[in-house]
Structures are given as C-alpha cells and as structure tokens.
Amino acid sequence: GGPQALGVYNAIYSVPHGQGKRLVVSGTSYLQLVSFTDKGPEARGLLAFSQSSEKASAHASDQTKAFAAKQLAVIPFTEAQIKADPAYREVVISERDKGAVVSQP
Image (tube, rainbow, N blue to C red; front, side):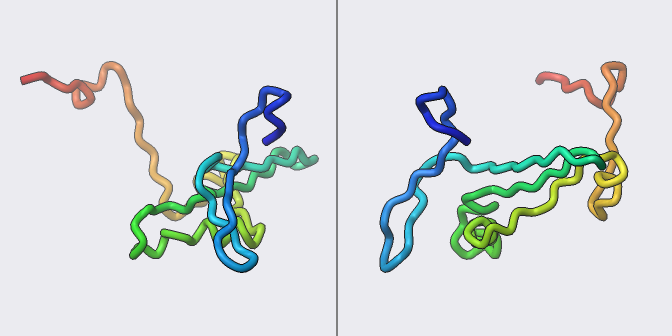
C-alpha cells in the first residue's frame, strides 16, 4: 500500500458502522506482507473481505476477523513448503497433451 500521490492505489475504504466499528465498503481485497530474511522470503497474507460472500458460509467473515486481529496466514514460498500442504497436487500440462485439446461443436 501507499499514498495515491505516489501513484499507489492500494487502500481499503471504510465508513462508520456502529459504536467503535467500521464497515469496509471497497478497496484492496488481497493483502500480502513479505519479509526478506537470511533464510529467504517469508510471506503472510489474507483476503481482507474473506473467502465467501454468502452470509451463511463459515468463510463469510473468517479472514476479515483475522485481518482485524492482525493474524495473517503464512504463505508457503519454497518448493518444500508448497509440497508440505496436505492438499498439494501436481498437474503437468503440455501443448502436446491431446487431453488438453478442447474440440468445438
């Protein structure tokens, strides 16, 4: 983020919304902070407006609350960190992969 006078337009705009509260109405949705350490880059981030716009979803305000509490998630950077994710899967795509060709009707 930074000031618009420097050509940076990365801000979150909010309005008063009750006693001591604010309602975010527009602005940056993805936040990432990167520290360059002796061990390499360390990144943290989140989606400021959360992962879902469905009010009934468990993810409707999860990351907004984390943002307010200054609790950004660790973002994997190295190949080992990425592959350590239990949901990790690798998909290889090739121009010569006939399965990747989409035929038109």
